[in-house]
Length: 412
Image (cartoon, rainbow, N blue to C red; front, side, top):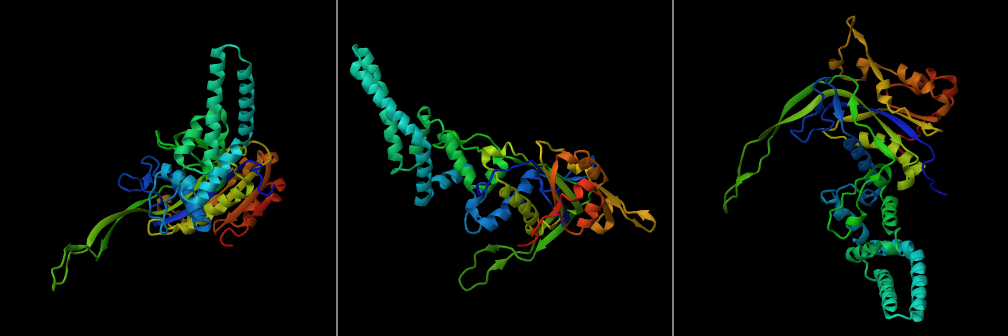
């Protein structure tokens, strides 16, 4: 098989740096999501997965991602129902593919229905009572109706006709799963993260909806230290015309606009992700898909570089297990140790770069050494935080040979 299913469980630890920007503003006021007790800043899993989706979209096109905006400039906002409808019926080519999926799904059912019709016809001819004959005729009529709907779908491929087929699901119970599998095969993010597939009720495709658990689950990211929020005032020298200009007059312009922008001065963030080989069977996630996820996590974070997203990937450690096991708390095994300036350790709220602290992985080393027999391989990538040699130096001898640097993580 060219693209085999995810063969083993993976657990990834990812660290990235944010400077003078808002890593994930809260919808209420767009302020950084800072825990008022710990003073640490959070980044939702939704935001982290957005970076992954953005990278895959840039490299594979809009049609490779389910949860996205549309249009050449990604400006068209659509609902999930509209997105799936467009995917299945948005063009002649897509209709043809949908018809092929439906036809393949119904092939065995076709044969079974034709056998049933033949059997009913034989029973009907042998029936001695009129009420028995009518019952057989009713069953035969229903079977032929379903068969005709399926055959007509090839030439009249539409959401309404698909709905009619789905409503006759007793005749082809695999149809819904086959259509969902078709979507998984086409959308990377559906294979990776799953979806609630919140399709609107009382619409032709409503029965395709419902939760689909993704094999890759991403933890909410958090800063590894206290952060400082900074509210900065911004201005614009441009403003809309106050009123349209009369013929022969110059337009009247207003003054510049003032506003506030919320950010943190600095933060080193960490998250973890688990790829479950058992859940991968339901979405078709492959080993190559998981490799793409790791690259997209790194590159998508780096490439999502704007005034509000000034961020740099710093460390990625991916552990591949040979058993159905994972730790589940890798983030808690990372510590930051302040350097000393003027004979005093730098306060964590004064961190402004990776030069203000060193990374402590003692807990991490002890953790993975406790289950070294369950570890098949470790993939490693770093950007200035720790070298591959430093990382391997502190590992158990049985694990050093299992470490491989992720190739071409920064560029192809």
